[in-house]
Image 1 (tube, rainbow, N blue to C red):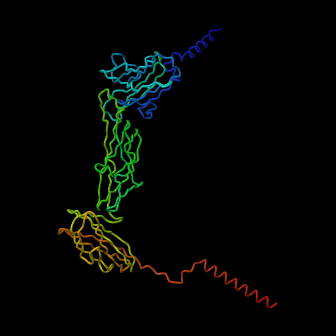
Image 2: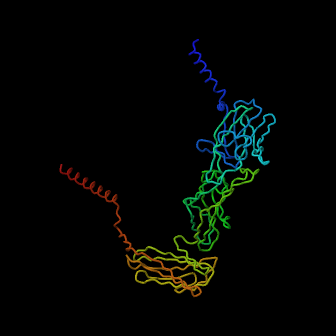
Image 3: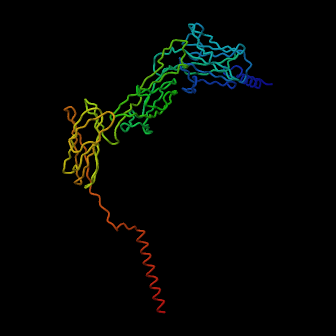
Length: 447
């Protein structure tokens, strides 16, 4: 055999032996997944992510099972630091003994263990290490470091992979509606829900958060969808609100809301000091509840408990007669005077449950509404008529107006003119048929 052939054979033998010397030669015999407890895996720069200060599962599935020990080494950078340079910021090592079924942290620092042995488990061919890394990272937003995870079985390296170690961060965002509005009738108990109005809470950190929506003392009458659930990183919830109204008097009720997000306690490594915030607070959508009649302006009279409801604008036709109703509620004594401009609209009658005419002396209560009916007639088209209300309470006078836009009179339909096109066509066909029969009869007689 020539020298050239010997060299070729030697090269081929060396290439064939590479798998036996490669540190990651057994990757095809092992599957590794990394995730926080109860969460999906996070990926950054095509590498798995571990968040400092939080328990994670490193799940490894092995084809071969005849091993005495499984070791995990996790270190900062691409090369293992020397023994004298190892600390919480640079090196961790965990092991599982298949004979004793014991999970251990081989590099405890200051007596603290960074393996949650009660949550570790072996099932079939899968070894689940529940491990964590102390948060020693600098206080820099979105800070991360590149670490290396190596896995050994009986001192044989099976796996090596870059892992991104991230600074723990929590945060919430709120989008969509800042205010959700409800309208309910006075002294009425009902449930109100509007699927067009909602607010969105998003998790902008890298740790799952338990979400709670709080409306203070009004929590019992407000139901918020998706409150109390866990929001994963980069996910959002759409929160819809259902209002359970009680028998409220007229008025406008404004309820501020808040949203809190807290890291589930089972995720936090409590064997070491916690160096990051574990909860976050932001606003929820505020609620604005208008207790009053639909399309009415609700005015709470300053310095009193009286509420006046009226319509600011209406449309009528010339010659039309219409009843306009205003409402007064809340505890107090009031005098109400009402008049019109008389040129464009005229008041025909003013009445309430116990009085007619104007001004009216009203005793208002918190348990019912006092209604006043004003019958008006629109006089001139293409004009704007004005109804004026003057409400006096304890010597203080408040003035309100209803503007009535007047259109042309409604044209009355004349009797006998409402003949459909179909009726006309049928009648013409009958006439043509009769003419045809008459002409046919005449021709027949001439013969």
